[in-house]
Image (cartoon, rainbow, N blue to C red; front, side, top):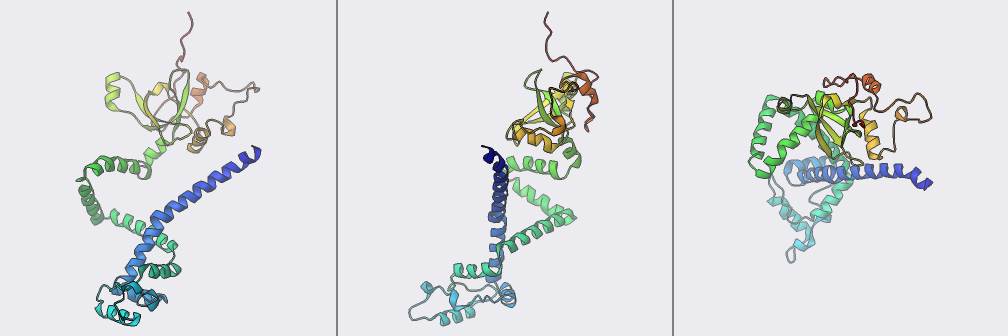
Length: 300
């Protein structure tokens, strides 16, 4: 078991890296590389660029598909007829594309398609920052909204992306770690403040409630949204990475500075009022209470 516990973190890390690289290769690099290959062999401009930069020739006898030849027709005659019939778009009816693509893979590997994909993503992002780009993007969104299924999913996906990549204030608030009394008083669950709550909820209850995302363990990508009274929210000095380590490990991995040593006479009480007073204020304007509320009913 000792050897397994020592190797397991490395194995999991390698598995995640390999899975990520495989995903990028299958869904970004390979399609983009295939598109580059297609653009070089199907038209006159791409054909000229290909033959000027690589030794690969589209109309090469080694790429002729013998199954497409007419009776008595030689590969040389078939290629000559294909060249003559080609205009802006090349006549590839006599070409075995599998053989041609295999030759192109040797000269233009998938990593080239990956680089092109990243360049195109960057270029599209720069384009959409301009006035014309924003107009085109808005028009494309309107077209997407005409499809019922897309109309139900796209707005929420867009808001999530904007939350993490555009609104830096929201991202800072999401990284605010707190503890809230959940699922009942006397027990605390780690969470992240996501916003300042709902105005209608505050008006109906005459209170101040903040939205807190409570991630699950050991899969913190899922969880619950709770609206918690500000007075019951305990701000913590933990970082986002530290909380993720606690959640994924089921509480086994705890930051060194947070380890409670029972033999130490100065160990702070996890629910004492002094801890609440010493905690830093949240970016959402939460103010720690002067004294922690009673979490259990006293016996008569």
